[in-house]
Length: 399
Image (tube, rainbow, N blue to C red; front, top):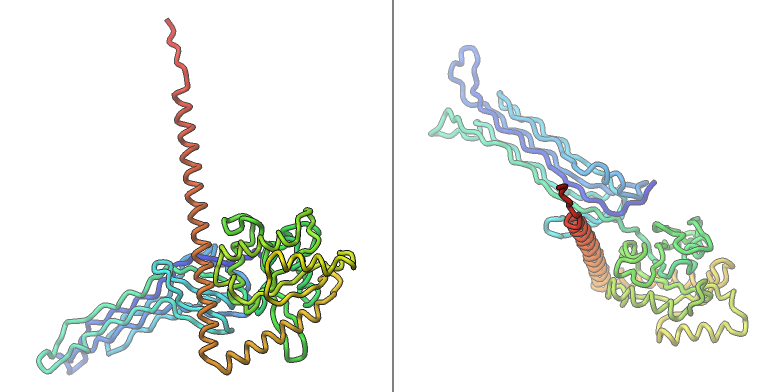
């Protein structure tokens, strides 16, 4: 199934039913009082996080969704039936945004979590409601209110504890295959990974964490080059980023220069993400001569002026992966304990994640607008060329 992580839809809540104008008419009761009932409430539109879904592709083909309207009231003070709520199931990890205002309406991160995105219209009142001591036979009713109409943008971001960064062919998918049961495609050419992959790393019966692998970044990614930029948003929920560096680049470049490319692109995409916790992982060290490993690894650290944790490993040979995973598990456990003990720290972490998501959204929208303007300019230039060709035709009149 095709992986789709963005979709725009329009939701219409149901209209409330109108109130009824009616009077009681029975044998021997020629002038009964008002007995018009109220209408029913319109149905609302609700999004629900469901298990087993991992794409928003269904919302690409059906963009308009309308809940049922409430029925009109009837005589004998009978209230109209309310419209049924429309429940739309979305993948866990879906963020809902109001396209008109840009406000984030909610984040569905737990199974069966619900979010009401359009409120159904309130029911109209029957004439019974308007009876008073001075108006015994009211002919006044009220119509049902219109339901809310909203244009929404749905964004799917994977739920993971750890995110993998790196150039294409840096060994990110190989690392996931080595430490988890996930089996993403692996090959000896770049851009093997085209969509995000998740792997669950089990350290013990009750301890595990989730790793997210996205397509590799390339130089110019922050300006729209390659695939990775549109998938970087999937790493905004993670607690930790692993920067994987290929110590034996296939194109003859240096590992330090390649690592610096990722640093620069990440900073341009989201400064908040670039300032977050990140570990440097030097991969494919098994391909280096034994007497050069220390020196080559130190060159990368010095080139980046790296101050954080550094790990050496080989994903293919499973060399150093256990120590890395153990360190990740200890880090995640420590973070969870600290946030549980300090609500203010947990709030700060959530605020940082929200800021990363906002920066990612702004950057992706800027790139989309830039591409749109470029297409318009290209079409305009093509039209100008076609118009100029009309004047290049030489007309010869026969004598």
